[in-house]
Length: 483
Image (cartoon, rainbow, N blue to C red; front, side, top):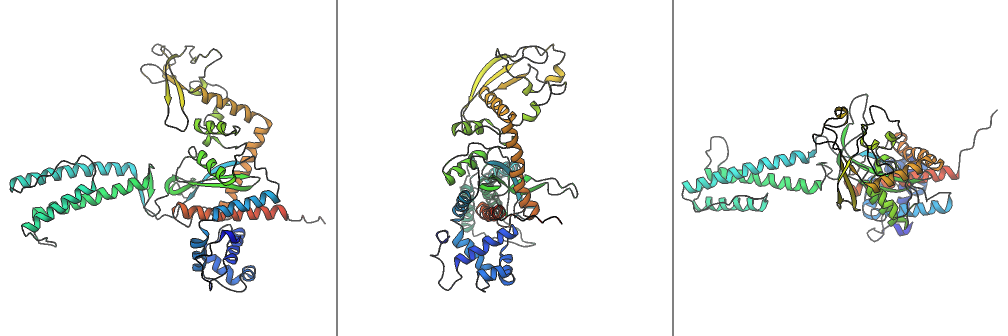
């Protein structure tokens, strides 16, 4: 393990880096998660850690410096190296990767949320105020015969507002106008304009920073900008834990070993599958042949990605369970019940045939997607229209034939004995790992902030879990003999 420790920045008089790493790994194996204070206490009072450290008692800051300066960069490589060792010394079927996602609460303070929809509204209102202030300033300059005229603001420009403030300051210096503050002090109109534009500049700068931090997300936390507000599990006792800043964590496991993790700020699992598999390929150099997953991962892009990399389709889609139900009066009007028949015709519950309108090509995603648009021209006088659609021109359908082919293949694969066993094992293994980490070891909230710190923390937790699994498999508990 020497190659995973950066000794270049360590002093000769410091603690042995290898022993510190051994203490960290042992602590995470025993406790699931170990804080810096826990590591310090274990080295003081636990004989196993005293044996590793030869009686030395490093402080919590010694572990912090070691993790931050000497362990941060190569930790992911160390995680993969451990998994390589487990592959060689245990029976692990790496061709099957069970994937599941969960949400961990971020270490963010209360009332630090930023909603981008509100930010957009506030920025629009601020722009209106700026335009009104510019018009008022131009009217004042014309009245007082000041040779300055501001142009209308066409976009949200912090630099332009700063130039306006500098211009007004120059006018105040020319006219020897002093800024006044405090109760009973009458401010000059130019000072009022200057302070108003300064406030506008601060607001526009703040909104620009918010947009840069959000990076396309709908929300983030001020104390941990990488965290996104997500719906957590509902607490039916206190009605709390519903909407908190957190991270979406994806884990792939094989035979109860965590093989790969991916930390994302995306609240949806749909967009995490491809970057997760890309990271897996970069770490191990190949792809698994089967990736059983729930309906949160079934999409056109994900299925196309699996086909491109020769991965069998064992991922459910959002209407998979509903399609297994019998057609009733409640669900027979759903779009998933209206699919092309053998002749390529789509027939509604009333017996009318949909008419092909056009075909469109969507290039927004990773893979090009062709969609056919259909419309039913017999809805006006149909007695079932109230149950079927509210459209005035008749019901429309969008059909992606390639996606239907993928979904049919998924249904065929999951209907086999192998498919049923894989989905059962997915529930046991993938969800079981989250249950062990969150429930057994009470680790459901990150202590570090930022995506880098969160991933570092989660990698240590994953290594500890795999070490426990390896120890359990190699040294199983002996059953007590019955008396």
